[in-house]
Image (cartoon, rainbow, N blue to C red):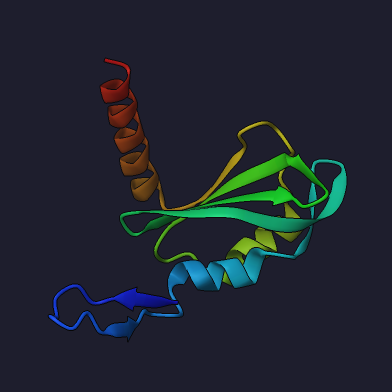
Length: 123
């Protein structure tokens, strides 16, 4: 993908970084065969969103998008750790199921941030 350099007068095109953390996570998780609840299916990564150094990855069963899960990935989380967890302890298939791979301190901060934002939105 190209990016536009808005700082130069000539607006020359520059190459954007092509291998971000989100790219690596997408390649590792999209199209993987996993079990979600009682269904074995191929994953489809629907979205990857960053919040600070954390990533939130929304995945669904390609054949049945109603079966989905959100992965909360911390900065020190390894792809192998996530893949192993998905294979050995699969998601249950509950609506809005979130599996967190962050440390307890990271999780507490994330929870507090989410609650604070929810409070601002409800006013």
